Length: 215
Image (tube, rainbow, N blue to C red; front, side, top):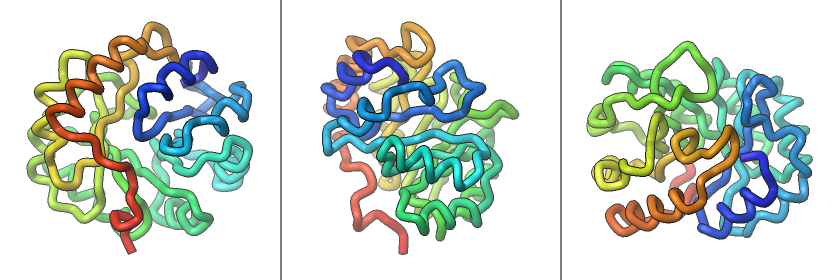
């Protein structure tokens, strides 16, 4: 997200987290957003910075400026990079592309160094494609890290998503391009309706409870 008023409107819906993309190549780049807009989010909403192969020093500085508590990594970041960010007190979500069941096993390398995974559609592009993968694949996931689901989720998907969101390791879903009126601007009414249906069918789980954080 990148528009202050739109951010305030969406924050009023009480999402678990709001994401801000700090990759300059993205049309959703939030690097010009006044830091106080992010700092003033409600206490129960996590502030997530999205990065693509950014140097750790850049991530640390951005996290300090915007009071980010979580970083979401969409590049080729190694387990060592994740460990360094996590060691500095940030919660770390690592995006993993999925096209087949075999892709789930690649997530094992991050088991000790991340707080959660984000399963998105596999693609050479970074930061998401807006396309779905076969969500039924996630029934095969038996890893110890909790996960978020991303990839082409739209307003009509809440009933179908309830089954995936019922997976014991699922923290929630990542809503982006199909809920936008323009890049970085969310359709608040569509979000409100979707979130109400999904919460009714699958429940609303606290994100990154302390007891879920891997040791």
